[in-house]
Length: 342
Image 1 (cartoon, rainbow, N blue to C red):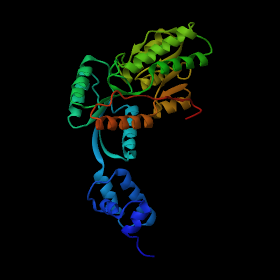
Image 2: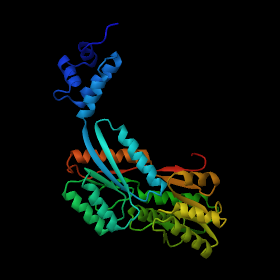
Image 3: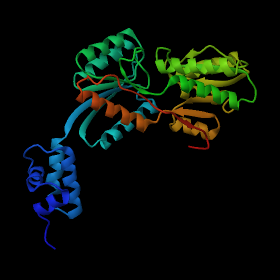
Image 4: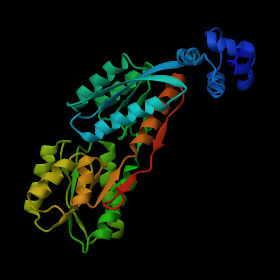
């Protein structure tokens, strides 16, 4: 068999010989879609110049740098989210993405705002998990003036819809959690609520939706005042222990924000794991094991792969439009896990 020629490649790809030569030689402008078609044809006919074609495609791709500010690296959920973002970036074919991911131990508005501004100095767009606060809002506005798109992940950071958002509908999440308690508890009783910080819009809406369901459908349950964990495992463990001491007849516990690992530790330490119904967030090693052990009844979880894909595609689109593409909001469906479907 003779080795395929440029003419054979052009014929297989449905392009002119000149176009095939430009793809291989890297001279002149050729559409990404055309280069990809030439590459596929080269693979099919066994063309010898695959290395040159791959190099040409890679060199012609637009390159963007996007940054993310996530919460503490000690929390598995954010490590999982970071991994989902890295994996999603590798699946994007029409451009080359360089990711810069940073984790914040200090979640104060001042530190968050400072890190946002610093990250934006070297990135075309940034994604951030942050609380609603005037200092954070000020940083967002400064970046918007610079045409640097800001995407709020997990929790909205603006109530007017002026900041791109990708996450869940907290109202529906909270009402779904409430429905779970009503359906599973064998009789009404007291339900405790843990929130990380009410300044996180997602947690505020989780709690609001939770209470609204009981007001509408199950008013014979008693919903205790929420207790803040400040996104800390140790504080969540202490708050859960206090709840159990003050309310030995507690029927269930809803962790509407950060702190699920602390709540689980307290329930296990006091011998209440499996006795007090527990609903919390995110499927990860500790919650998966808790479902298997019976310490948790339901886990409500973000679809991380889809969240990552929506975030990256939205950021690329916004960068290409130089910030003039309007608001990008993607409300994702949430996953529900029990012991039987993990």
